[in-house]
Length: 157
Image (cartoon, rainbow, N blue to C red; front, side):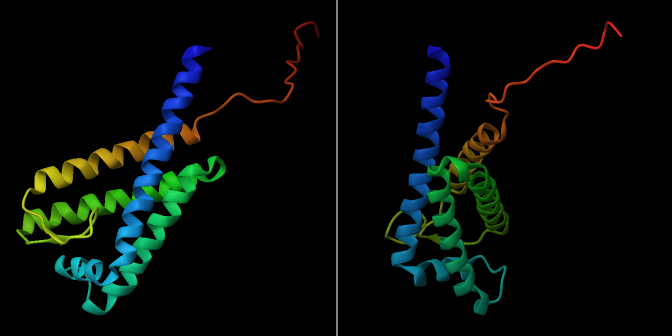
């Protein structure tokens, strides 16, 4: 009984913590969309005309994931979207590291930072991806059913 309550509390804290993180980063990016647009352009993957719509789409997805993780009914979908989103971030930073691009990122703060330590940046995004997978696993696993299930016995026939 105590173990079950402890595990529920840990998953609750993980969902709210990651959801709050997504909402915080979305609010920071929302304040300075032009900086995020510049960051997207510095990856040199999409045409410059796509950078603003992609910045707005990314912010919208982060808001949806943040709110969705805090609402139990929406948690599985938000965790799936968050997993795809964080995997995309990991892929973007890995390809930038391989190509040797100087990326300026405003991901978690108001200041634009020149990314110099790619292994650290990739590692914490992989940790966030793993946290999203744990939340997705917890949201999708079978829970106790509240239906009265009767087992039928046909052995005496």
